[in-house]
Length: 377
Image (cartoon, rainbow, N blue to C red; front, side):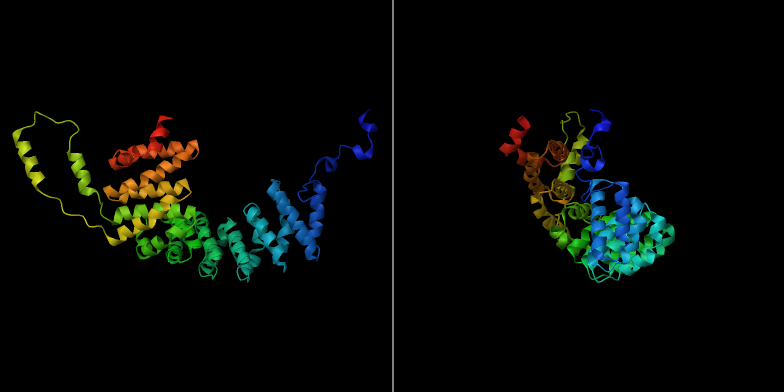
């Protein structure tokens, strides 16, 4: 039977072979024309159906950038469901279609005043995605408005927009530092992690900004999302190492002064000097209350399900904890050895490097049968 003899119902048409050809994820040219017509209609139901199909195409990996002119016209739609989907689309393609997005700048600015917090956050996210230097003043003003928004979700979006503006115009660094300083005092756990990430990217050298917000960050550490915890732990470790005394200063000196091999041919004068040094007792170390607060705030995170959080706490204790408290990280690190092989390799490497200067970790590990069994296997 030849190809021309096939019945119409058995034709090799794409619509009959592709199960999604007439459904939500349709992506052929004809359907694009239908979508454009639906978006031009006055009925919100048709616009909503069209936007659902377009978002479905994007989710499937299809390129829907050619629909940008038809979609951006509906950014001022009064239907809240349509407007949400329009902003989802614009967040995806605003950076690619900058010229067309610039035509709707005034609409995005009005979106910052919308009663719905999701619309305000989406409008700010779209504005920060337009990589055109000419709108830098508008972006800066929008971030300042978002910084003072009542919704923590909008303030979080403003924090995410800070690194974008800094990469677009580094000359705005001083203005952005003022915004970061303001947001670091935020009491919302949804915001703090994003602000610290912005701080790490824009002005990591400005440790002085942390002084006023140190205790606030310590108190919120446990309740922040996991990736925010990693950013805060990294920043606080760096901060504490520059602001607090080393609790193991004299212990390290004693260990370093003890030679691995005894030298039998030392001169008598050197031995007399050493004896005099041994008679001098080092001053007693008293830990600062803020130093102790950081260790106390980070300790519960050793039970985190996120391996990166546990590793960050272990790093903090390695650098900042007294010698007799570093052993607390041993069991949580061994618990991570139940994870994937990639995690196991990193954990074992860190255990080995930390044990070189913190022998107490090896003492704790030696008492753990699971660790010994894992190494033997």
